[in-house]
Amino acid sequence: MSCKKVLASDIAQVYRDEVKKIISSKGIRPKLVGFLANNDPAAVKYAKWTGKSCQEIGVEFELRECPREELESRIMEANEDKNVHGMMIYYPVYGDRQDQYLQNIVDYHKDVEGLCHMYVSNMYHNIRYINKDENKKSIIPCTPLGIVKVLEYIKVYNPVLPYGNRLYGRVIGIINRSEVVGRPLAALLANDGAKIYSIDINNIEIFTRGAGLKLHMHKVQETSLQLEEVIPQCDVVITGVPSKSYKLSTDMLRDGVVAINFSAFKNFEDNVTEKASIYVPAVGQVTIAMLERNLLRLYEYFHENLE
Amino acid sequence: MSCKKVLASDIAQVYRDEVKKIISSKGIRPKLVGFLANNDPAAVKYAKWTGKSCQEIGVEFELRECPREELESRIMEANEDKNVHGMMIYYPVYGDRQDQYLQNIVDYHKDVEGLCHMYVSNMYHNIRYINKDENKKSIIPCTPLGIVKVLEYIKVYNPVLPYGNRLYGRVIGIINRSEVVGRPLAALLANDGAKIYSIDINNIEIFTRGAGLKLHMHKVQETSLQLEEVIPQCDVVITGVPSKSYKLSTDMLRDGVVAINFSAFKNFEDNVTEKASIYVPAVGQVTIAMLERNLLRLYEYFHENLE
Image (tube, rainbow over all chains, first blue to last red; front, side, top):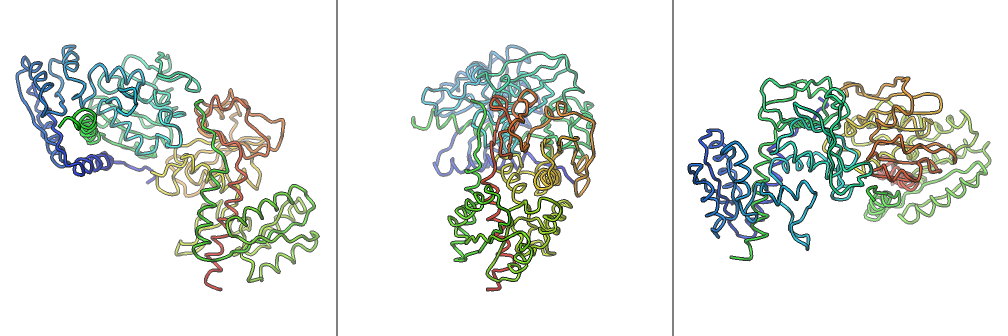
């Protein structure tokens, strides 16, 4: 078999070990609070899994449940609570723009999900640090960051190139343009130098920093090219279509492609392994590892010297 | 500037340091003999440079000059001489098929250039070892091997993939199909999983191991595609055109391409750095490092336990 299958658990382990080691050597105990204000059983399951994962590496996790009408005040309370070092919210809460409002209620000192406006805006504008000394990195949303770490692990990021340009020359297709994963991911990867075909049900957009990476941050252009024209050009194809029936045809893929799926459903056909050089069937565990990594960062940046 | 220029001297140093360290730790002194049977001043210069480089890392180098009519018997004499651990010949001697005959006179135990039939045939057939225990690697010609090492150094070889398939997914153009460099290089890189466009003045050939790397060794097919159609598809373009006036148009190159030149002349235009992510303007010093590395291998494989 010429295809190498790479499991999210193996990648996650690298980062989890790193976080665990730092926590243990410093003798600290960062605390993460999760807010559950919907009755989504999937969210409850995810919360339990997060708690278990946190416990294993020395993070204290507390799940706080409340009616959604109380959520805002509970977040503000946690913003003030010195014993809380990071927080996350199980979305969707309202499932509309009010959720975006809630994201901005979280103080950036405790925003492990990287969803408040400052972090999101830094990400789109390719601003990597939050301070002038450039020793505190901006927080990046966990799933897009997790996919970046997958791409680093499998060496799609070329470490020979300077930091910030390590995807220069790569052509990457992303099938999903949600505000939570697909669009931030397209921006992140384009900011690191790749040419991105960002594909959704309505159209295809190209995200790049321009020929020769002349731009500091990516620009976006719509293209009239069709899916069957762009996919064969892609070195890497990343899928995130939330549908059981959606399957990307293996016939379209370039031989030796890198195939990554972040949907809960398998978006590639089973025979993708006949065409792909590397196949990553899921990324969920890397996402949780990034949550823990972001928590540790925020703890080190803002809390460590206050205790 | 978004292009990273990588110098052959930096890459060569890695391998030279490695060879030097082994030689010094083992307290050995491998001896390389160079045969000069033409009056080519370029060859004399190259021989002096080889001598200097060998001396720096602890290899004894002896240049033996003779009329070309005596060369065969001088090689056979060195084949028998226990104090000679490797030899090389400054070609061209006759400049025709007689040179190929001379390559086969060199005993494979001392063939640092990897040009005798056994090594050449192993290379084309993707046979990597010369013994059943698979602990003695077949010797690969120095310039193609040097270019492989350049590609490893700049991470075009993906170390995440299994050994033997690390170029799977890469599309590489090679402009030169000489028997000494271009054709063996195309075979080597295709055997490692790449799709190669092998380009010379007459035609373009595709070297691959087939879709999904189903074949153990590469196959070759002629294509009617033209240069301006294939070059924009290439992740990597390697040039070796022995002409001062030849310049590959930068316009044809894919943005973020890896550009490598092994010709003595600059085959890329000066503005290649506006398109390339990585540019390697020359490889000569890596070639010499490979000569020294091959010598050490042959010494370890065949001579070490005899002294």
